[in-house]
Image (cartoon, rainbow, N blue to C red):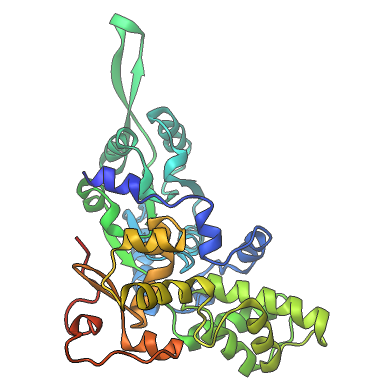
Length: 363
Ligand code: ADE
């Protein structure tokens, strides 16, 4: 059942770049800005400090790191952390994506290529098919794989040893993983949204690497409009740079950022057209909610997974959206943000889910 759920919740390749605001040209840009060591990595302090300890301990023992699961909305740095771990461990990083590993043979091909203590990063690990996932267990537990020899009546399975390795799995929601896979990871990390100050530091670092002149206030303004997400912050910096170059002096100040955002339809809270549409549908068409996520997804014309993985997490975390067992509700903050008079609290308790169930899942 979990498997079916995982399949249904798979994010389409097309949905992700749109939802995270990434455009094709942004991908190499994004990569170039990724820090390669813990010292350059901004934010996620508690996780970073723990990972430093695990790396130091594993290196001192000459062992592979324990298998690690990274979880969180797109753009928060799951791939970046895997790259840093490989760099700090002094091992090779091998990267793939769940749906790409189509059969056991493909997995065996990946696992037999690994050197001692290397890291295998599987993005969207919840999208591995059941057969591949099951054959991964033996690799994770015992560093062995099953190989078939012979054909027909003479076919038999033998086990061969592979190098000790670390599996770093990444997923947008841990709830999409099967229990046997989830329990095989020695450590689980849920990445949090970044603070505005952390994002401002990331923007400043990126601008320095790209040799863009930006004032501290402008970096802060970009940070405020980046939905807690470094990938969004770097993308916005890139767009603002375009406006500054063509319409201004090339240097980025606060008016350049606010004017660029106006042209991009990004408001002061960093919400784009889709965020506002999502909230408006709940308020205008469903009286503030509750409304089921499936209905909501159909209304905005996006897959359910994109709504759940890309749009909702930040709106929930910031308290614009609430989740109740009967569906999503717009909060008072959402009404205020959109400049709509909120209905009175009495008699409309479900509109104010703060006490009840933010974070509860809908049936
Ligand atoms: N670029 C993207 N994410 C980053 C982070 N967490 N720290 C520094 N630079 C980044």
